[in-house]
Image 1 (cartoon, rainbow over the protein chains, first blue to last red):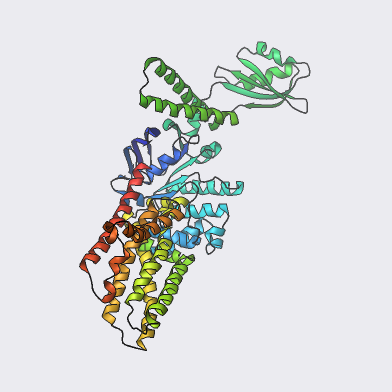
Image 2: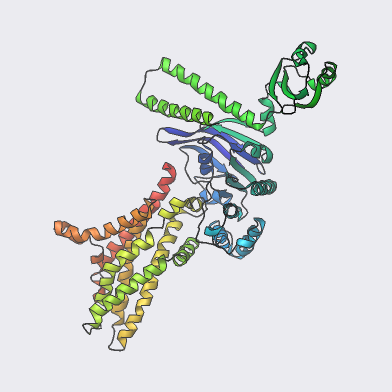
Length: 353
Length: 227
């Protein structure tokens, strides 16, 4: 079990992680989501004891990582971002070195290393130099380094970055497999990945946690209205009249024309009923032919965008209040500069998207 | 400590660095063997070790120490070390002793020359041993300085240059003022080749080593909080 209590990390006057609290129970697979620079890696680095939090406590299976580092770190397998490796070693040598560093007993070491190498599918390359391996293999070697010694908690910082689609599926399956025996924390900004693998996601933005829940709940919570997407052939242009025929419909929104002459619409309702049944009855009467009829789904991506955007709005509201009320002391000036930069960056990002 | 020591020593010989360091030593040692021993028909090896310490260590030590922490930091492998259950102290000491081990290997190789001389005269073995101990002490101090330099930068070249400057600067500083006459590291080795174990020099060399090793440990621990 991992407990993160009131953890703050400051770099000078910049606050990278701002008073976060969460718990990860044994055997959970937790995804850490957030835009770039949100504080994901910083948080992971603090959990693994690579950097010290400015304030707060991190407890791994009952051991405080700052006070009992040896005990706490023994429980953790960490695969850092950018997969750092010793290029002059072979995968086998690297994994053995990691096993030694992680205090795996001498008599179990050889067996443990062989087991992990087999698990990660590295048998064919185990005696080649890591320098000469492909990116996918390097990733696996790094992961093998994290897994060796059978730690309780496995922390993976962006485990699928830079892999090809086949390797991504392999790594995802492997993480699912790991989740059966270990507690796994992984960070990613690929959202479908998180909803696929994780039982719980923590969304973090600008150093603050903005949501902790299951992916399904987040999707539900941010669902605004009940939407149906239809693709129809409508030679007489009767779609615009549909709204009068079915009273529950709020909006009928045209999406696009398809090449085969069909049109796509999104129909929404605020009431809790399933519109599909009614549409199926009414549309043929209006001489509209249905090609496709399905519920629109909110994805984790929508939920994420919405949550991140709402915090951004709150921030700007706060900022304008500040400007009105307070006289500018030096400290605040610098804080604001940082905030301004961040919003600038964010808006740039959005433009790019 | 043992795990880091083994890996580091292995890495010295997986890359050319270990061989180059030993090569430099053997080259210098051979040149000075000719200049100080053969050409004078002398059996005294003291000057030989002194000259090698003065000029050989200057090249060997930066070579051995420059990558110690600088490379780990640059490649991010530092993350693997510092998130392992091993303590910073054991990691630093492991690296320190690995570099020292390379120096020890060169010293063992230097015995060949003693054997060659022994065909032509008698060698004073206790003096030779004291000389080697002195050489090792100077090397320890130099390595610890190099290690400290490596831990403050992520650029290996800068780390090497800092080490060389610290080792060479006293040669010129003496010309500026007499105050600097006692800070030359290699001078502390001056008495050992004549078979004298100077307590003050030994204490001085050991304290420089201990101080630099300690500062390295503190710096790395401190960086955890600042980083």
